[in-house]
Length: 266
Image (cartoon, rainbow, N blue to C red; front, side, top):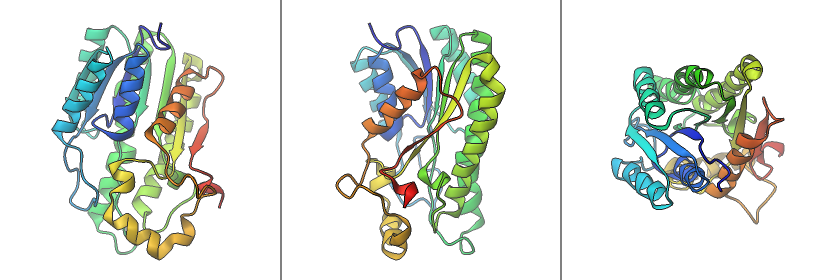
């Protein structure tokens, strides 16, 4: 028996990294997966390798390899109608929706006054507006199912402790906290819990293969330390553990769970 037998989870940003790991673990525990990822370069100003359609196909293969069922499509969280149709088709196939993991996001670097307009608006549109569209598409489906459930929104430690050269990213991640707090209050009577997780560095392409991140740490390193030099980067399993906990913690809503090696406290 799996922890999520018979349940259905919708995960954005599923092609690799945290999203892929969440999908595999939920599938291993019995859940059916509805997933999406843009699986392409979102913007010219991002400086880490983008996910690809091959990555998305590999996620599907890995989910099926552990015995899971999955409906995954390539698309953009900024496209509300795409998300609505994906969820409608997913519920038709799997019968319900119990959990949402709003994981998709992008990062860019630059001083506040030197960023291009695209560097600011693209990140806000993907991270904040795109997540709002995920909730707008998913919440009515959850309410119609009448099973309660949970929503976990992936924010960042930059949404608790603003970081230099991350104006758009920090603004978007602070915004996700407000979005989650509002939704938690609105959905409490419907037995749907809403929480956020706040990672620091995670062992993903976005976390470790960003060429501009190295420069940022060199120039602004005093703002980026953690308390755990022996464990500088979280694993994707660390994040999935947090998502699993919040997806099952019946007494927790409106919380902000920091997976940050103490970085927000220094």
